[in-house]
Length: 307
View 1 (tube, rainbow, N blue to C red):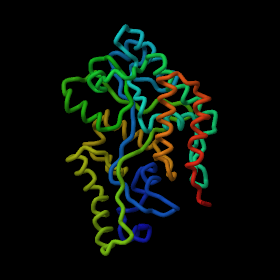
View 2 (view 1 turned 120 degrees about the horizontal axis):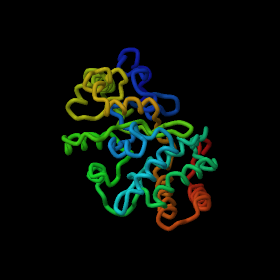
View 3 (view 1 turned 90 degrees about the horizontal axis):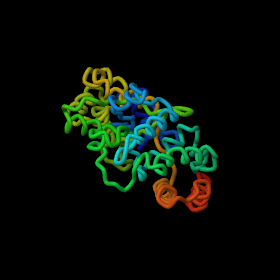
View 4 (view 1 turned 90 degrees about the vertical axis):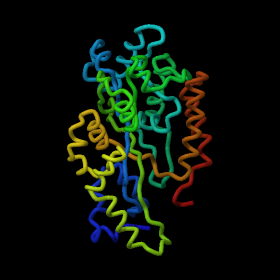
């Protein structure tokens, strides 16, 4: 059910309260159809002690620095690597592409993977895997291997932050920074939205409940109880969020994050890319040729507004 007509009476629903990327995920056909409930994104975790030894005490800030740091860490010896880079992550391929200036979504709600910058981005991040800097298939726990120094850098959502704090309370040789940049340092925004079914018999009550859940005090209290990140920008003024510098990196990154394309069949398209990524990283397929094959496989899935 479109919510635009309720914003005046329920100002908690005003999209201006929320991170732009979260709002983008709640708009469809220029209508507000949902309200952000909580958010997540990726930031870079790094071992402060080990990165200081190789000249990056504040963590890498660019693609070039990320590769250089990971390569140096990988050179420490057998069984030690540069970073964690999951090969089947649903978002990392698109994060790197965005950072390289790629725009997937077309005006007719299709997708376009023809930009050569997409191939460049795939070449960049799969290089870590092909060169053994980021291992695959070892079954390493990302947080335990991070603490042990086996994989001293990792790109993680906020639940990993909480896992690290809860399970390793005495471990302090780590910090977080925003995603290393190329053309930009965009990350993905995820989380959960709240909507009202258009056939509900109680639309006013439903909207009032969403308004309560969207109130800044409710959002802060929910964070303190459940430890998921609030999408309201002003909630981050609370000391529980603002004074934790490692956690506050997520606030900074959320201002440079965006939702995945709102495209019909996106999940099927994403599954096809996972298949291509496996061929590239596991079987050594040529990247440009595999991207071309991927584009041909997803062509029948393209559904536009005209159709």
